[in-house]
Image (cartoon, rainbow, N blue to C red):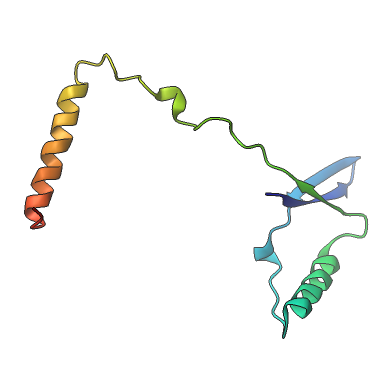
Length: 100
């Protein structure tokens, strides 16, 4: 997935990069082609003349963000009690909800 990013030149030899999301520039047309043409017109009308639009490929994590915590509770003496309490609560809710 690529995300469009607008790069603007600022005073003091600085730059601003901001994402250009579709929510900011929504238009409607009689056809797909017309709506795209209108979107391009509106998008280009709000950009500074020296702005540049680039596409950025965001970094995709190689592992699940919670993977580093896997196994942390394996030697915890309260883990089995905790799991038993969860099961007891589930069974209690099933009875209250009339489930078998």
